[in-house]
Image 1 (tube, rainbow, N blue to C red):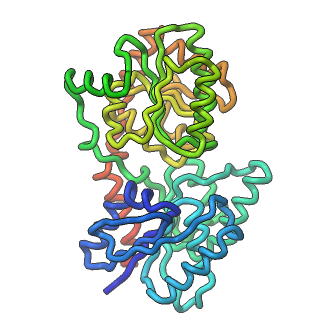
Image 2: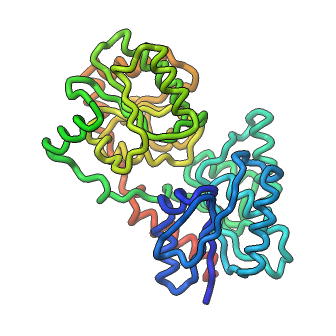
Image 3: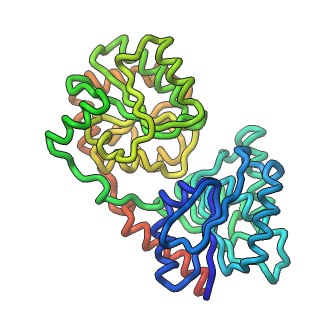
Length: 371
């Protein structure tokens, strides 16, 4: 029986983004294993290994995890391993490189967004150097946005490099809601129907940059009074953002929802999505918002640029420009013509939906496994 290992820094990543692919291999008779920090209990996963991961994305800070994973690889003798994103990718590839060449499994890496830009500063150069030093074992590399594809090809970060349209969203998870259902959602979270509602979804982190959104929102409320901002998610910087909202006196205009399992309910009660990430792969929140017909006001970075066309289905802004973002938020809320123009084009193309994406991802997998 063939064996495959799916690896990520967090178990939730495997459950949220890779169940379709783990289920495929399981249905094909493969023994499917998972490795990540946390717990994973899924019927398509035959065995799970819990691994500790340092927050740092540098191999030297995860030496213990690399050695532990190397031991697992030696004992289990996988045919294929499938690492995800930067941290787990570096750990997995480093562990594979410690194995004798004859014992190395095929490596099918998925890039969920490099933590650097080509030609960036010292930190970007350091991350790029780590990717290049550990690229040799990569038989297949899947990328999700144009800039990462260009970087991967330029520096030959995989023997075969294939662009895909993310990991695929499930349309059935985002049905329209009835008027009664919408009223219930608004009542549950305290969302006022007479306000223009901006929605932000994501882990509270430096990368997601919610602080900028809050400060820009304050500037927008100085121009337009009937605005509200709904922030969904948890994370390390949640307390800091809540403190900032109190300092700015915006407690009545900004709603913190915490972790929300049914995000469709929030999309259906919002008027627009706003995101200020420093970098992305191909963000689910933007794809989901477009599927639900929401214009998106997002930072002008890779991943966002692949989904949003400025002035067509949303607006782009530069990181750090809170004044510009504030003006965009207020203009969108008080200019019905602009809003309707953007909303009309706020549609997610079929190529980003799971049926199409699953097909292109599995085709890439089979080119390595069967080739």
